[in-house]
Image (cartoon, rainbow, N blue to C red; front, side, top):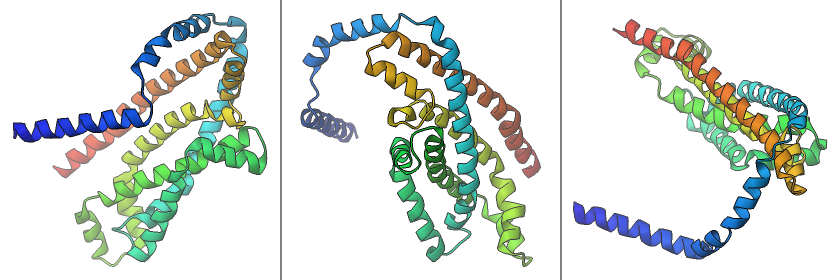
Length: 261
């Protein structure tokens, strides 16, 4: 067993070395570049307090983009997840739907943003559309996997009395997957806020527009002002998400366990 483990470790090390060579990884260049990094960090520490008002307003716009995109994306993803679940449909239904969702997930949010900037022009609307598409791809996947993991006994019991598929979804699938969906939505909103912060790179609005603009002009201290606002916002959203999970998701799961007993 030890020899097998050593062999696996040796293979992994060999692959890392080979990959590092192919992508030009150079520890020497990293060490030589440390003085440049320290210079940038020093400049970034010079925060411009006068920009905090603008940064907060830009962050508010970013949160609105993430909120609209998350809600719209979840609304589209939910019915798609039903069609993509193998325990609710045959392969001629879930197969094509899964292929579409996989195609949507293939594009990162920033590429979606670039496509929508070309389509509708620069601004927040392009960012909202990009976030919506990205949310559709991932929430639908997470949700249909949740649906497929539902205990088959309740579904079989309800199906045995001759209910329709939509009644099965209403009385079994939705209640059984609701707590997982809430967790997925909270995670996606947190992720979308952070993603919205960089969509401005391609002109899709939000606080990222200011950040990339100041970085382009080497105004690292001003860029840091906006990044600090992003950091504080993400920490607040994370704290709220934890509270919501503790209050609704954990209690819901505990109640299901008690009911099962």
